[in-house]
Length: 97
Image (cartoon, rainbow, N blue to C red; front, side, top):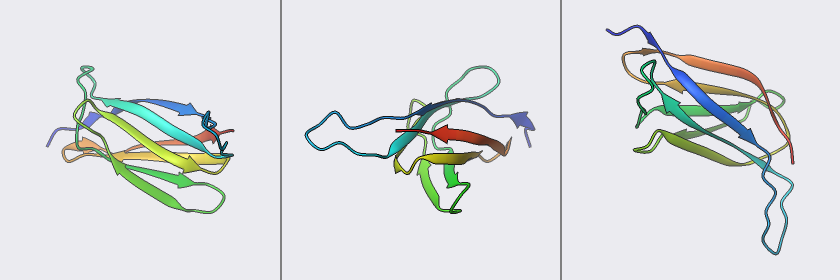
């Protein structure tokens, strides 16, 4: 079993809608890579609100990209899990609007 540490480039973006109706929620997006900088498709991502313990889940696509939208402002913890890799947890991420 490989004991590599996942590295993640998590960009916490506070994205307000530019459409006709604006939204007061934000997003967490990122590209997941391994220690050799290869993208990692199919990785399970969980974004958990520190205030409410609400979890939103997604999976990275073929380019290692993930996006979780419609998050209320606040602090979040992002967890990435893939078979054969150590679980990665990044906490204290702030989503603004």
